[in-house]
Length: 640
Image (cartoon, rainbow, N blue to C red; front, side):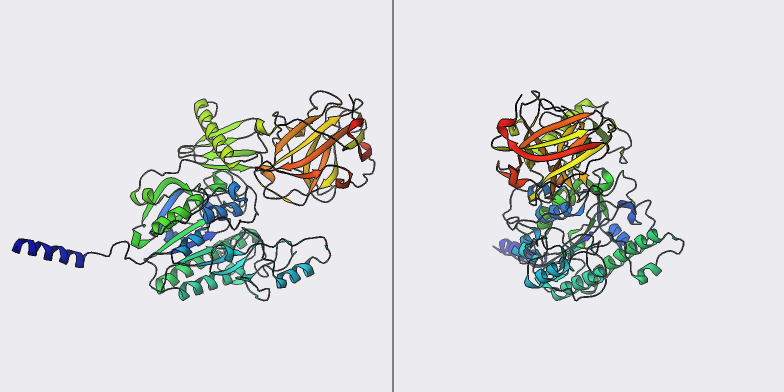
């Protein structure tokens, strides 16, 4: 009996002196510091970094550097990856910038809020448009009074995505002193929650840091999630005079001085936020993440990587990243497991021992057990598509797939992607191709540089009115000469899962090669851009549209074509037309009908179906192209 009593006393004493269990420990705060366009070697902690960044360097040395952390090559998709844990194509935010997150997407802020956290965002959103409030609508109308047809697309606003407190601007590339767009157009975008605040004057980054620190102070007694998407060091290149004075006088080039001043200002701001956490006694139990949204522009440094922003080589997507959490023993270390922005939502929730909310299916993985125990990452691959290529990254390889070639790099031994080893590793190419196909099929991606799936093909069905376009090509028109004939406009959003499809035919007396349909952007001959360039605009038969392929079946026979629009998404493809090439004198007479956007769910949106959809302005004859005409005729007029 006495032995049993002594045993119980020993157990009770041990329990009384044991540390609090995880369930009773205070929840850790989370501060996510998100630089804009910061390259791998824009910070001095990395070899080659020439701009001093002592505060960021200290954080990298204190924390655990994630040596293989991936994002997108432009900002909106990477931000959406963090917020949702889902691939940008699933949430309508890639591959280009823009897109509006749906309310139905569950965000990391909503996840933390459901677990009792206060949530705040301070800086650049770029995952949706300014809200449509009376004050903002008035400012929009005034700013675009010379463009009365320009319509306001009101966004949800960040508070609808789980943020309790927000000081935010919605676009990208805004002026640092006025928060206007780079070109000076449009109203100021600066908000406190849903309060439009164009009257606030000062440097954007000062506001961001000021309000982030206020949020931290106000919530020091409760757990908080603080998301700080800095504007620095995105264009325009604008620095405060005080920051320019701190740049090494040996840097004399004006652009380099401004860039260095902005990087150093970012470093100071990171230091201020970390110092505030320290001052409030919150540093040890705060998970701090520092990263970038994509690689640097030509003004920065992505060494030793190839490429940069607007590139899916390592330099565009391999991001400088560190996590520091003293109480969680995440410090003084590195981890080389493959991971990235997709994985932050489930990982940070797990680190905080918070319950994951119900979400749409995630692409991101919880890397916390692997990070904590320094084991192999659960992340198998990252996948991108950008203009005329898609790419995949695994722990060992990076492969880029173009219309007519593959590039394969042994990424463990060739981080600079200097030697293409595709020919020497056919089995690796085959395996990675299968993985890439698995990704693109699961996403429903309509790749512009690859032939669409056969299931999207269908029989042509012209009826009623069809469009006839005729052009005379003179002997002076050389193969490199071209004429663009716009005939329709379209002002609705397209997504990476959309395709373009149409029926096309030629007349018996027409030249049979040297023309093709393409989406266009630009308002006049000097600014107009053709979307379907070499290596892009591949139809279901595997043909490049830029080569001007003949219509199968010959004159008078209709053909149906399907082409992916992924590279143009998200956003608006405003104009549509036919491109004619020189090189052979004669006359083109072609017909087109049923031009429409085909969506992932099988529905479609028409662009041109009959006369009412025609938007054609008379084109003056030149010495190369003459007699340009666009008109609607009866489908029955098209004969062999």
